[in-house]
Image (cartoon, rainbow over all chains, first blue to last red; front, top):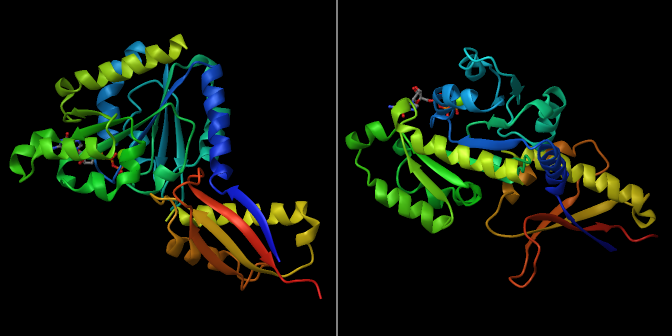
Length: 219
Length: 90
Ligand SMILES: Nc1nc2c(ncn2[C@@H]2O[C@H](COP(=O)(O)OP(=O)(O)OP(=O)(O)O)[C@@H](O)[C@H]2O)c(=O)[nH]1
Ligand SMILES: [Mg+2]
């Protein structure tokens, strides 16, 4: 005997993601989920943006890492709440982990939460955290073909930051081609080029974040 | 890799469904049928690997797993537990 169920399995996560989104909305907090392959430059980008961001916004960081707190230790020069999640081998953050972070953070007192997801170009795409936007940091050393190979992550991204542009001249790579591949997978996606370790290249990135935070606070 | 988490979600859904549906109670579950859409966010091979590990020694041990794709004209997107097959009553 066959019994019809038809249940969306990912709702187990995504229903909680929707709860998180509602909590963020109630408190007018803009939440950005930062993803990338391991080592593409998430921590560097966050670290070099903190002077700018903490000057303008009341912010917190949720730091996802397999086992360590190494990345979180990069941010301790700034007096902001940092919530560490260790996934103990898990390849992604899920909505339940973010839910626990919400309980710990005072949302009422925040404008902006930046989530550094676990470095992985596949798994985080399947888990809605309740964030407003997803940024994918893409190191230019990863090659031209990845947007199509890892299409789900690129499809979910609202903005792709092509990082490590300082070393592009030393590589046999056509950055325009990378950008057009991204646009083929996700036509509406914003694309920026920068070097996370050179703060002078980050102006457009700051500007994008500023606009997003402002449009959220007006909702 | 995230299929290990997805395997846990499926296990919970089956438990909940059995609890709610008297037709499923006290019967051996023989097969779970999944439906999925492209692009995949859950890969069947990887899912089976983790799920079969998870159900060892539980009421689901030995259950067959089947995967079907949604037709173009179906509106569902993602990874669904479509149906549960149980042994017919004696
Ligand atoms: N040349 C160059 N190196 C960079 C740039 N941004 C980051 N790096 C280097 O890339 C390496 C990895 O950077 P991280 O910021 O740790 O990368 P991540 O994405 O946080 O890594 P995981 O959290 O482990 O996934 C470090 O050695 C950085 O110094 C850049 O713009 N140019
Ligand atoms: Mg990092």
